[in-house]
Image 1 (cartoon, one colour):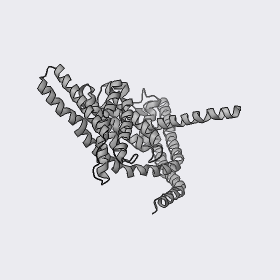
Image 2 (cartoon, rainbow, N blue to C red):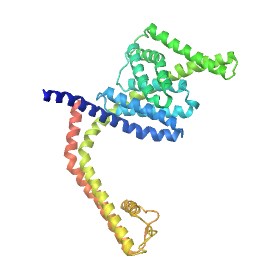
Image 3 (cartoon, rainbow, N blue to C red):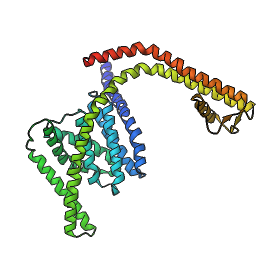
Image 4 (tube, rainbow, N blue to C red):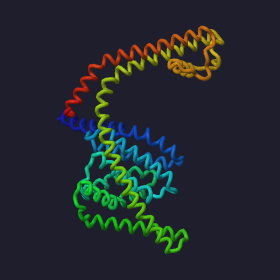
Length: 370
């Protein structure tokens, strides 16, 4: 009885650990790409938070949802693209106007996942489910930066986005454009009317005449919620179709990397050992023979490692220059060893793993039927 209870506890915990590890693997590349890009676009921390949250939510959510269908790279790609697009929109739109940020983001995500083949949209029902999923993910990512308003805005754009995606999905399949569902059409019209009313009242509060405010709302709302999302959806879907075969290549590369990881790592350890050892030799020579290196009076171990690293690449290191014959001899010996290690040992490593690489290539050819 105790053993059964223990088994019941272990299974959910193991699954939770796997999901957590998988989420971290999907989140890491998104963070590395999106956060620096966002800070390069804007110095506003809230905009960076908006971009990072959007990218993480989309990347992790899609990765957990897609599982292994087209590889883990698709979730990271869609998340990174969504995060960078959010950074650009947040940097361009003053005051984080959700009407100009949310509809393009949702259309972008839906178009990418459709083009990548994670969910082939067959009609309005599939489009509505996909738009709702992406709205939920993007809304969750916008919560830290925009609060509940960002989440609600994402759900509000679900009907018009689903209407756009469903219409173009039917055209791609070569079918005659079916009549859109009544509820989806009414929901889209209600969202547009609500947005027009909100923009018009905002213009009135700003002191604009009623006619001008109404005209501005009647032009800006369809542009922001229909015209731009249509262009973004079609562009993103075309980009996804183009990317799909290129992303599948990474699944084959992963097999090669598993074989090469340990030998290449061993080569890197030896190369770094040469750098560290000769950094110590150079520092010791500078201690016992003052003047052997110019500019090395206050050099610490970090500077000596940097000096040895550049010299291993046969490059000059600014700030420390060998002067005495002993210093030049030391540098010459390091260069010879580093170049020899790179040529001889790397060639030996590649020769040792060549049979396994060829076996992987043969298996890939058999799996593709070539």
